Image (cartoon, rainbow, N blue to C red; front, side, top):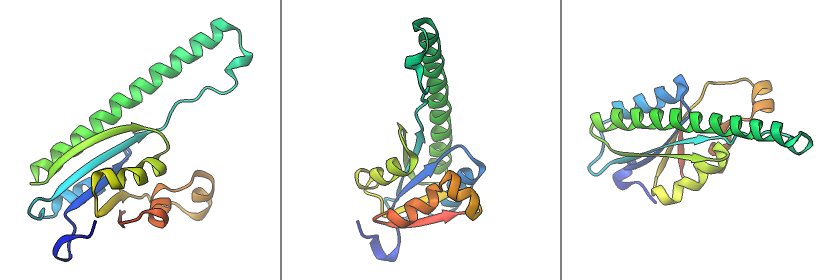
Length: 156
């Protein structure tokens, strides 16, 4: 998966709907794409989990599970819109672009998408969170930087 002629020709951009992710897409869109340059935009939706529903009566469980399902569907629809907007922006600037929405843990899904996308550069936006916030919330950018088998570009 080496880059051609010292550059990168296949990019994977992880987006999450934030202004930082939009900035990452805009940054890539501002670059002149190499011949055959392509981008895969990936948005990962974390699953909605309802804890301890087994303890509730069946009618309450059913209602909670229905609401969780509705919430998941709404998040997936929003994610698809984000991906479609990013893909349109990238195509408008000359990149061959496609997108995908996955359910799962963002770090894990981004890293597992590297191989199938044939990416030689992973691009993510970062909000520049502090050490305490990173400790409690984790950082997708930090995790993929440490674990990605390819170069990672963090756009702030």
